[in-house]
Length: 303
Image 1 (tube, rainbow, N blue to C red):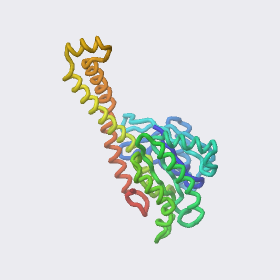
Image 2 (spheres, helix red, strand yellow):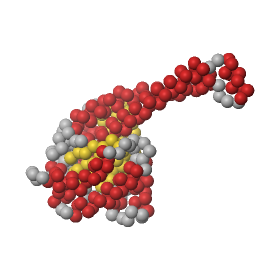
Image 3 (cartoon, rainbow, N blue to C red):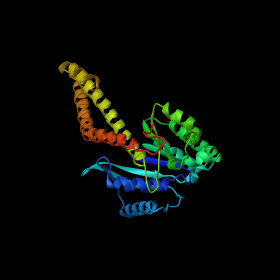
Image 4 (tube, rainbow, N blue to C red):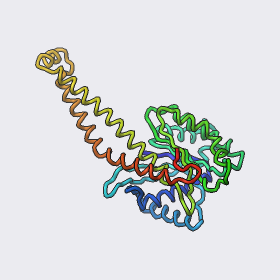
C-alpha cells in the first residue's frame, strides 16, 4: 500500500509525519505503527520530541519515502509506504517532468493526503491562488482512477485560526475540490482539521482514514469476488456430468466440471485472503471513529 502526501512548502507535512508517528508508535485503539528502518524511527522520534519543546523541523525539500508496518497486538496487519512529495512539485508547469511523475503516482496511489495551511489560507489572499494548481492536479489524477481510493484534505495549523469566519475563509478555496471528491464514485473523502504542535490533535485521522478505508475496500472487493466465484461454481456444478465432459472434450473447450473445480479453487483462495482482513478492518474503522471525535476545532468529527 502506498499513501502519497502532497502539499506546499510550510504546510506542515514534515511536522505532521513526526507527530503522527510518535503517537501511533505508542499505540492507538490497539494499533501501532513502526518504521521498518531503525534510523528513521530515531529521526522521527527525535523530531517529535523537538516539536513538543516548540522547535519545528525545516520544510522538506525533496521527495521521500518511508516504509512503515501497521500491527495490532503481536500481529502484522499491513506494511505500507508513505511518500512525501516536496512542495516544489506543486509550483512547476503542468507539463513538466516532475508534475508528470506526481500525477502518475497519484493515479496509482492507494491513499492520498493533501495538506494545506489553514491559517495561511484564511489570512493571506495568495493562498487561494496557490491551491488552484493543487486542485487541478488532484482532479486530473482522480479522472484516471480505475479503483476506489481514500483521500483526506488535511487543514494544518487549525488551532491558530481566530474565532469567527476564519474556518470558512480557509476552506473556501478548496470547496470546488471538496465537492469534486465528494461526488467522485472512486473516492472516499474526508476533511480534518489538525493541530501538529506541542499539543497535537487529530493527527491520527489522516493515516487511520487511509488505512481503514483501504482495508475495508479490499474486504468488500474480496467478499464480492468470493460471492461471484461461489455462484459460478454452483452453476457449473449443476451443469456438469459425463455427457458435458464428453462433448467438451470433443469440442476442445473447458467442461463444466473443470469450471466447477476452477471456481471452487478461486473461492478457497479468496476466502483464505479475506479471513485475516475482516477483523482488523472492523477494528481500524472503530479506531478511526474514535480519532475523529478528537480532532481540533472547528471540525470536531471530521467529514
